[in-house]
Image 1 (tube, rainbow, N blue to C red):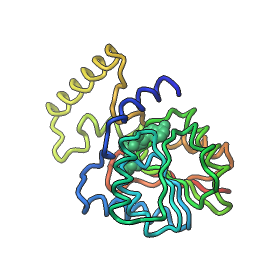
Image 2: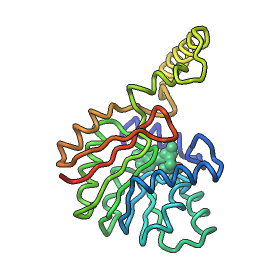
Image 3: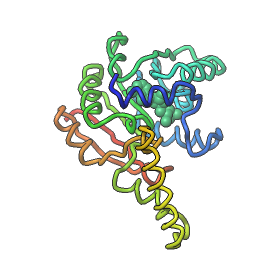
Image 4: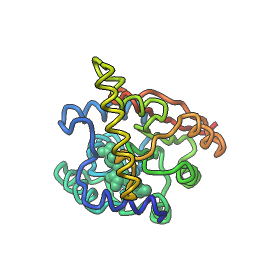
Amino acid sequence: MSKSQNVWAEFFSDKICGGHRSSSEEFISKEAKEKLFHLDGGKTLLDFGCGAGELLVYYAPEYEKLIGVDFSASMLDEANRRIREKNYENVSLILADDKTVWKKLDSSFDRITAAGVFQYLTYQEIDKFIFNASNYLNEEGRIVLFDILDSRLYPLWKIGLFSQDPKPLYILRKVGFEFKTMVSASLKNRPRDILGYAHNPYKVEKIVNKQGFEMTCVQSMYYEYKYHAIIYRT
Ligand SMILES: C[S@@+](CC[C@H](N)C(=O)[O-])C[C@H]1O[C@@H](n2cnc3c(N)ncnc32)[C@H](O)[C@@H]1O
């Protein structure tokens, strides 16, 4: 595991929820509906970084076979609890990361997806992920990466420019706060932002094109500063 991944593995080692904007069933079910729309069918699905299974339980009735993968045992325990509660027998869970997961799979998938996970991978790791995923993707399959932090919008959101009434003093305070957080994080050798790294959609597209895929980029419905990447063979 790289140094940066060690940091994230440690960060998630005791977490039990995916950090959605709201954890109410009403909100998560709306998010899941949006995601199912972009997943657009298929019979088998790999949910990489499934976390506590908050979305996975909404995907389960729509697929014949699903595998959830995560490197956090506490998240997987929570996912397991949710799945058993709903009596879904078509879902399996695997404890693994983006490097180790591939050897643990014994079949390929119609859909490989991840929601709110790619911000914890570097561009180099994304490149390797797409390469490995392509070997486990069925002919007409899709890789659908949800909620990638947009490097063009996220900094603006963080300083409050998307708020209802962005007054100059409010923005100045936000900029000051962000600066202080950044300095303190680098002094403590911790990640600058617990939401991970923001990625430029054009750079992600270059990576996927290099691997022989096309990519369509769509704006996330529920997060102003995130986008989804829908990746398919040319
Ligand atoms: C923000 S949560 C999202 C969880 C879930 N996809 C959802 O939307 O509810 C990110 C998840 O990705 C997992 N994760 C991050 N990097 C990972 C990696 N390299 N390998 C496996 N899991 C990873 C974390 O443990 C965490 O459960």
